[in-house]
Length: 93
Image (cartoon, rainbow, N blue to C red; front, side):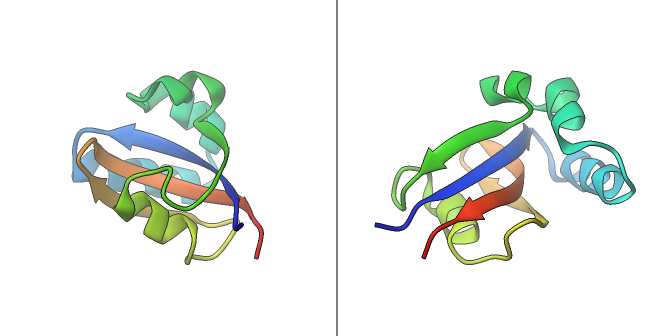
C-alpha cells in the first residue's frame, strides 16, 4: 500500500496562506512558520503529520500528497478546515 509523510500549515484564509508560502519560499523555516501560525494542533510539531495512507486525509489533501512533487511546498489547498500549505516529505510507490 502506498504511504506518504507530510507536514502542513493550516490557516483560515487564502491571503494568509499565500503570504506564508512566500515567506517559506524566501527562506523562512517551514517548521518555525507552522509553530507560529498553524491553527492545527500539528503546528506545535512543526506541522508534521507523520506517515499515512491514501484515504486517511480529506480528499483535497490526499490528491496533493499522492500526486504532487515531493520536497516542494504546495498550496494553498482549500479543504473544509481552511487553507493548507503542504510539504510532502516522503512518498512510497
